[in-house]
Image (cartoon, rainbow, N blue to C red; front, side, top):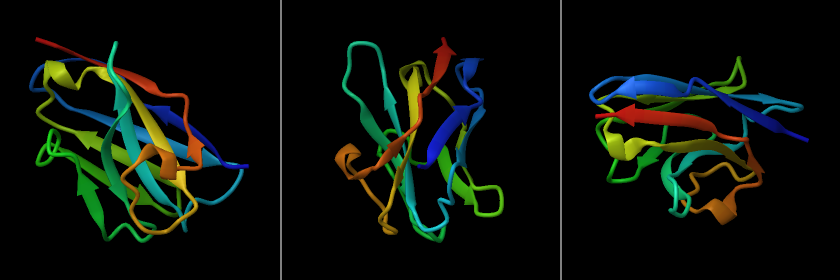
Length: 124
Protein backbone atom coordinates (compact mmCIF):
# COMPACT_ATOMS: atom_id res chain seq x y z
CA UNK A 1 0.00 0.00 0.00
CA UNK A 2 1.52 3.28 -1.13
CA UNK A 3 1.61 6.03 1.44
CA UNK A 4 2.21 9.68 0.62
CA UNK A 5 3.67 12.21 3.00
CA UNK A 6 3.75 15.92 2.23
CA UNK A 7 6.19 18.36 3.74
CA UNK A 8 7.46 21.87 3.17
CA UNK A 9 4.40 23.90 4.03
CA UNK A 10 4.55 26.95 6.22
CA UNK A 11 3.95 30.66 6.53
CA UNK A 12 5.33 32.96 3.84
CA UNK A 13 4.78 36.55 2.79
CA UNK A 14 3.09 37.41 -0.46
CA UNK A 15 5.57 37.24 -3.31
CA UNK A 16 7.61 34.58 -1.58
CA UNK A 17 8.30 30.96 -2.47
CA UNK A 18 7.88 27.52 -0.97
CA UNK A 19 8.72 24.03 -2.21
CA UNK A 20 6.45 21.21 -1.19
CA UNK A 21 7.62 17.62 -1.24
CA UNK A 22 5.57 14.45 -1.44
CA UNK A 23 7.53 11.38 -0.46
CA UNK A 24 6.09 7.98 -1.24
CA UNK A 25 6.66 4.86 0.82
CA UNK A 26 5.38 1.31 0.73
CA UNK A 27 5.84 1.05 -3.01
CA UNK A 28 7.12 2.82 -6.07
CA UNK A 29 5.19 5.63 -7.73
CA UNK A 30 7.34 5.55 -10.84
CA UNK A 31 4.44 4.42 -13.02
CA UNK A 32 1.84 6.64 -11.39
CA UNK A 33 0.48 9.95 -12.49
CA UNK A 34 0.75 12.35 -9.59
CA UNK A 35 -1.08 15.52 -8.69
CA UNK A 36 -1.45 18.31 -6.20
CA UNK A 37 -4.75 19.61 -4.93
CA UNK A 38 -5.58 22.26 -2.36
CA UNK A 39 -8.43 23.12 -0.07
CA UNK A 40 -8.98 26.53 1.44
CA UNK A 41 -11.19 27.06 4.50
CA UNK A 42 -14.84 26.84 3.59
CA UNK A 43 -14.10 25.80 0.02
CA UNK A 44 -14.05 22.55 -1.90
CA UNK A 45 -10.84 20.79 -2.74
CA UNK A 46 -9.52 22.04 -6.08
CA UNK A 47 -7.08 20.78 -8.66
CA UNK A 48 -3.70 22.51 -8.81
CA UNK A 49 -1.46 20.48 -11.11
CA UNK A 50 -0.65 17.03 -12.42
CA UNK A 51 2.33 15.23 -13.92
CA UNK A 52 2.45 12.01 -15.92
CA UNK A 53 4.49 8.98 -14.98
CA UNK A 54 7.51 10.05 -17.03
CA UNK A 55 7.60 13.63 -15.85
CA UNK A 56 7.47 14.97 -19.39
CA UNK A 57 3.85 16.08 -19.38
CA UNK A 58 2.39 18.53 -16.90
CA UNK A 59 -0.81 20.55 -16.59
CA UNK A 60 -1.73 23.45 -14.34
CA UNK A 61 -4.84 25.19 -13.15
CA UNK A 62 -5.07 28.67 -14.62
CA UNK A 63 -4.80 30.18 -11.16
CA UNK A 64 -1.24 28.85 -10.68
CA UNK A 65 0.06 28.67 -14.25
CA UNK A 66 3.38 30.43 -14.61
CA UNK A 67 3.95 30.50 -10.83
CA UNK A 68 3.94 26.84 -9.78
CA UNK A 69 6.01 23.97 -11.15
CA UNK A 70 5.48 20.27 -10.54
CA UNK A 71 8.34 17.82 -10.91
CA UNK A 72 9.29 14.33 -9.84
CA UNK A 73 12.35 12.32 -8.92
CA UNK A 74 12.00 8.63 -9.64
CA UNK A 75 15.11 7.72 -7.67
CA UNK A 76 13.82 9.46 -4.56
CA UNK A 77 10.24 8.32 -5.17
CA UNK A 78 9.20 11.92 -4.56
CA UNK A 79 7.12 14.58 -6.23
CA UNK A 80 7.68 18.30 -5.75
CA UNK A 81 5.66 21.48 -6.07
CA UNK A 82 7.70 24.64 -6.44
CA UNK A 83 5.51 27.63 -5.67
CA UNK A 84 6.73 31.09 -6.58
CA UNK A 85 5.14 34.53 -6.43
CA UNK A 86 2.73 33.30 -3.80
CA UNK A 87 -0.49 35.20 -3.18
CA UNK A 88 -2.79 35.28 -0.15
CA UNK A 89 -5.36 33.39 -2.19
CA UNK A 90 -2.93 30.47 -2.40
CA UNK A 91 -3.50 29.88 1.31
CA UNK A 92 -4.81 26.33 1.72
CA UNK A 93 -4.01 22.82 2.79
CA UNK A 94 -2.10 21.22 -0.07
CA UNK A 95 -2.58 17.53 -0.79
CA UNK A 96 -0.45 15.20 -2.85
CA UNK A 97 -2.26 12.45 -4.74
CA UNK A 98 -1.23 9.42 -6.77
CA UNK A 99 -3.06 7.59 -9.53
CA UNK A 100 -2.31 4.07 -10.71
CA UNK A 101 -2.92 5.34 -14.21
CA UNK A 102 0.17 6.68 -15.95
CA UNK A 103 -1.38 9.60 -17.82
CA UNK A 104 -2.16 12.95 -16.23
CA UNK A 105 -5.26 13.10 -14.08
CA UNK A 106 -7.32 16.24 -13.58
CA UNK A 107 -10.04 15.13 -11.17
CA UNK A 108 -9.77 14.04 -7.55
CA UNK A 109 -11.89 10.95 -8.18
CA UNK A 110 -9.20 9.64 -10.53
CA UNK A 111 -6.63 9.35 -7.75
CA UNK A 112 -6.09 6.27 -5.65
CA UNK A 113 -3.79 7.53 -2.91
CA UNK A 114 -3.76 10.73 -0.89
CA UNK A 115 -1.45 12.33 1.61
CA UNK A 116 -2.57 14.00 4.82
CA UNK A 117 -1.89 17.48 3.55
CA UNK A 118 0.42 20.32 4.48
CA UNK A 119 -0.68 23.84 5.39
CA UNK A 120 0.45 26.77 3.28
CA UNK A 121 -0.34 30.24 4.57
CA UNK A 122 0.49 33.35 2.58
CA UNK A 123 0.30 36.65 4.42
CA UNK A 124 -0.38 39.94 2.69
